[in-house]
Image 1 (cartoon, rainbow, N blue to C red):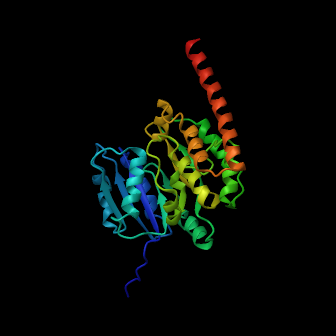
Image 2: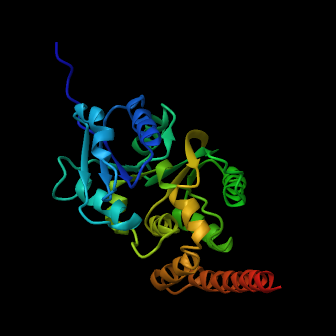
Image 3: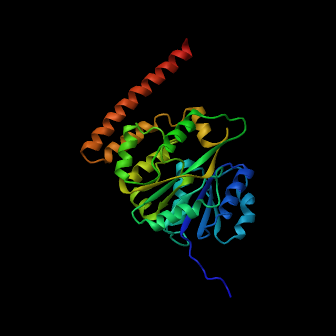
Amino acid sequence: MAQAYSPPLIGIYMPTYEPSPTHLKAAIESVLAQTETRWEMLIHDDASTIDVRAIVEPYLKDPRITFARSENRLGIGGNWNESLKMCHGERSRTTTPYIQLLFQDDTWHPHYLERALGILEAHPDIDFVSAAHEYRYEEGMKNNAVYEEVQRARSALQPGRHDGKEFLRMWIERELRPNLIGEPSFVMLRQSLMEQTGSFDTTMQQCLDTDMWLRCLLHGNIYILQESLGSFRVHPRGASARNEELGAGIYDRLRCFNHLIKVLPAGELKHIAVRARSKALVKMGVKFLKRFIQNFS
């Protein structure tokens, strides 16, 4: 007897650009190894100079996986947004109730989708789930102070449900440092939440995810999973490493504050955000001044 068809619940989209074939295959293999199988995935390439389709061709035999390529470079945020448009817009085959990104360098442990989906299915008042994960340092990269700060701060969070506004207040009081919700590869969201928040800000280079999570917290509640369910690769060719080296997105955190303050209604939370922005601005000025003195001493 033929197995009954189960419609996909999770729309996975994997934005790629000049990927390492080894890393990309490992990412796809980690999807195929998931214990939760009710998903569909779009691999969307941002006009890479290498033939990404040839790399993923063997995986396209799985009817759940499709591939698309932009003719012109869209940039990080543009690629993410185009992927969402194709997965959940007019050109999609279905509209899945849950959304999940997976970057070309990252991998999931086999139970990731099952655990995240289980929480959202069991708790209608939870709008997105953030899971802990490891940082895998490769190609000579050493422990990064930024990622170490993220791990320390995130491991101190209370596991389970958090009211969105209360979590937002706590994060603002920390001056939006570090990224407590983490990389998009380990965050599953309801489609209905994304409809409220809108698309990623394509003008940001480093804090696109932080800006999105702030909007998500304004509209919904979050669940913190403290068990490690995947790996985030840190290597010289990764977007985060390149941005840090080039100083790209250095003002993005202040822009996140500005966006947030603009949409917050008048009240205590808005005042807290304004004060936190002022503190962050002073600290950033001191940091830049020290760097300037070091460069010319």
